[in-house]
Length: 225
Image 1: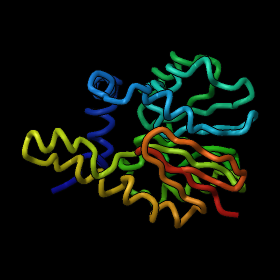
Image 2: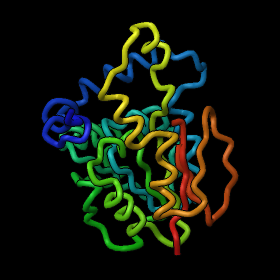
Image 3: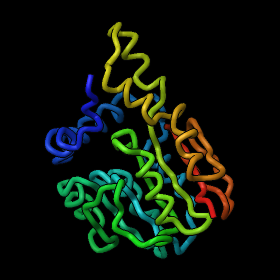
Image 4: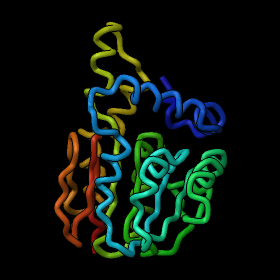
């Protein structure tokens, strides 16, 4: 069975042309989450970048994380927010305005010079990428020495209770979990990064200029020399 979750046409034209489908999924998580601490706040807690960091986000979506943490963004951060969907880029621009730069890009071919960024964010996006090895190579290329990649993904327990209730598996989501999930991402990241870390639940990160963190929680990874 072909995997539509890595099909660029399906993703761009049906899933992410606008934020409608994404917002519906976010609303479901917000409505039924059992964690009292909001997910967007938890994700932002993991952005332990330097005060004057050059930050790139790939797959920024409609900017929900930034929208719910706009008061927490350090003045010294230089933000470059990107997505392969023009509609998503337009929506996140409405959130942050001139606080960031924006571009429509493919993470498999980033249009940025080597060592352009101190940190890269990739939340719930890499399981959609057909050639993850190429994408991770691109992320490593644009990170400076000791740079930090931070991201979120899903794990094998994702929607476990719902799957048990329905008595069946959603094949597309199971493929996403195995393609680049909390359990399968580390070995892919280790080809390009050192100090790959995973965390479940609210992270309590320690700071080190040589570390990179990766999360479904969360995962971090540090770029190699």
